[in-house]
Amino acid sequence: MATEAQTLSSEARARPRAISQWLFFVAALVFLMVVVGGITRLTESGLSMVRWEPVSGIVPPLNAEQWQAEFDSYRQSPQYLQINSGMSLTEFKEIYFWEYVHRVLGRLIGLAFALPLLWFAVKRAIPQGYGWRLTGILALGGLQGAIGWWMVASGLVDRPDVSHIRLAIHLLTALLIFACLVWTALDLRALAANPASRPARMPTGAIWTLSLLGLQLMYGAYVAGLDAGYAFNTWPMMGDEWFPSGADVLTPFVSNFVDNPIVVQFVHRWLAFVVAILVATLAAEAWIKGERKAAGAVVAAVVLQILLGIATLLSGVAIDIAVAHQGMAVLLLGAILYAGHRLGARTT
Image (cartoon, rainbow, N blue to C red; front, side, top):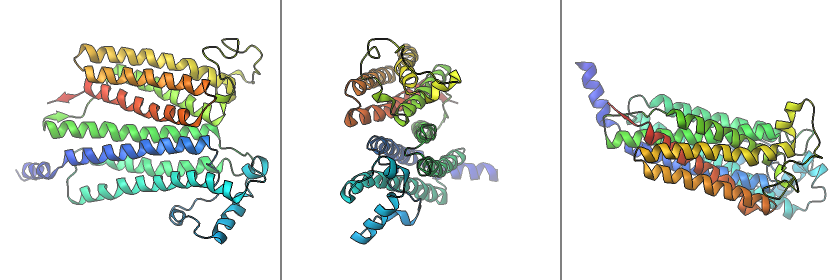
């Protein structure tokens, strides 16, 4: 009886709606983080800050002497020595700005998640079974910070650019955090609407769609990291051929799918349509089951994403279009999660 009374008391204190709204807010911050990360990459700003100072790094240079010291540190980096030699202090401030915003936003997300989580925990407002999920997301956030520096460090030793593989890991981890936030928020929103609601199960169609989308997002990061988007700016063919016959081929052959910019762009171009087919299948399932809002959302998102991808190529990777393409990838992920959650919703 005492245990039953304790459970009822805990359920009475639980605030699933408030927690759901908070998680959606944090997910929006992660979306913004991905967009700013895209700008940072496209402006070649990611290596402008050559030290990792998780606490003191929140304070930017405040006077001419501090700016000069920061610039002097950057001038020892491979990017400056091999690419930006002769850059002025004013030009350095421009690239420093985006990397600084990116890092500060990461810290802001950490605080925006950790502090409310602590408050909800102290108030015992977290519904039963969700504490481990929220703690896991917090741990992922800490890991993401370490991955971010691990990525930047790859461009501070010999090469003047970050590893495209580490860039992909960094992006995919951010999107995993976004997905966990959205899925958990949807579960809690359903719980707030119906106390008999149980956590949704991911349907098989959504699992396949998300798996292929994850592969496509990885290739998108490869394209960005290898500057593969600049290789061919024509559509649908690459120049005058579907695949350029004169392209260099790496050995072993499998390495072309990771390190060859032309092959990476080719895969990213056409894998998009495989993802689109799976999205259409998921949308059809949602439509048949009466989830027409979800069906419309995923179809609109994938069509817009493909159009933005084509526009990015044809524009010669114009920054505004390329950033919109990266941001739309996050929205497409969110739409698929929403559709999958609607299809996998359960009640007792």
